[in-house]
Image (cartoon, rainbow, N blue to C red):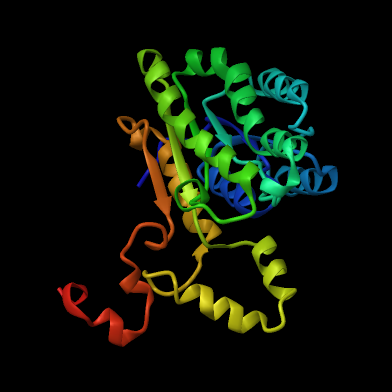
Length: 272
């Protein structure tokens, strides 16, 4: 399927590693010119050089997105280089464990890391998106639906991102701008692998988590997340807006009988 993305321009936050890197790679594979905003200069420059050597564009913009002036500068730099913005992917964030015991200051800092820049990026890119009748894809988290414990700031941010997705979809529909969100659950990223590696038995921990994922009893891959994001960003999804898509193998919403032992899964309605 031709996603009709060739020569489009995407601005992606946190595109140097993990899910963001997967999104950047899939966008570029479809012919998109990408601006990647990231705090780490080494990673961003390495990615820019890699694609430059292939004759493809992946402009690195260094910026700490907790500072809204960095968001404004990222938009301005993208427009200076490419002259337009067709796609905004709000992705950057971190599950920082700012829980109830952390206090209001830590909570506010968590909102800065995970929420405020979503609004700031959309605000500063708005006129360019109006000109291109472009789209926004927000990366959320299943935590906004399920909770997780001891991560109030992150959960509040991700809940707000879901709400803003619907709010902006309503607000921007008259301008032809689509807004959707993609929510991962248990996705196999380098950070997840690092976290499991610190446990006493990493393989056992991984197996236990995978048994909770109904479809295939495996982690979602970065590529599966990225494919959904890129499709939503494309003209092939031209009448899709205000949607919250879970790419999670059924982890968030399917009946918990699906995640138990075979004997329980075979009981009653689960067999039908």
